[in-house]
Length: 99
Ligand SMILES: [Zn+2]
Image 1 (tube, helix red, strand yellow):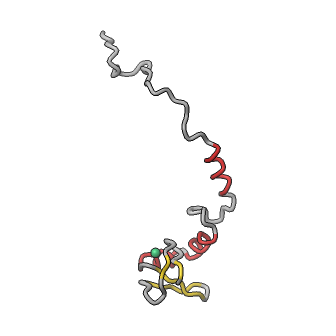
Image 2 (cartoon, rainbow, N blue to C red):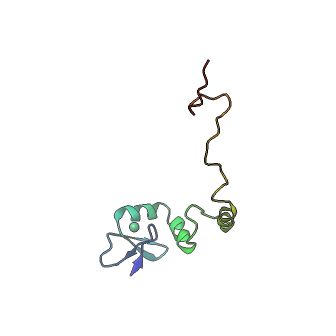
């Protein structure tokens, strides 16, 4: 079984919908669209296959620090459930402010 470098699916070479050669190696794809995308930027998908957690980083090897920053950021902020009436905003809280 070969691996589709574009979408990551496992493709049977005998049943592959499309294939493309690059750098002397034949790559198999689940769909012609994947082969087309691969041929437009082969290195992009080959590099992405080596680094599993870098979907958009072409040459950025320091992308691991981003995940640490995301983990350090608090997911749940201590926010009061009741919404305070904003100053200078339209009255929609039912406070009964009349002119
Ligand atoms: Zn595919």
